[in-house]
Length: 63
Image 1 (cartoon, rainbow, N blue to C red):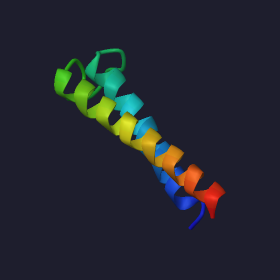
Image 2 (cartoon, rainbow, N blue to C red; image 1 turned 180 degrees about the vertical axis):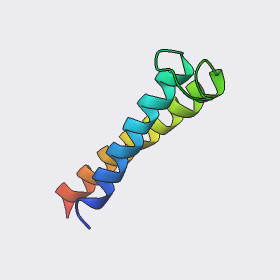
Image 3 (tube, rainbow, N blue to C red; image 1 turned 90 degrees about the vertical axis):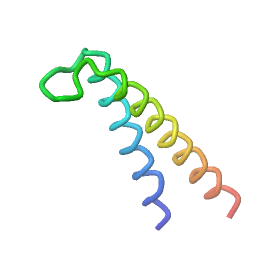
Image 4 (cartoon, rainbow, N blue to C red; image 1 turned 180 degrees about the horizontal axis):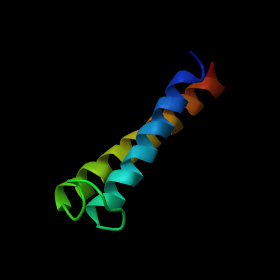
């Protein structure tokens, strides 16, 4: 369980990067390409994933 949350957070952050790049039109090939909605969704996912990684790593140090 110690590694589950950081891994999930990292995956969510990576998805956020991908969705942001697709929304900006830098990665093509899907319905998300060039849509500003996916820029916002990607940035939110990136922030949430990063926060999850940081929070889980800090919690591991205290305990």
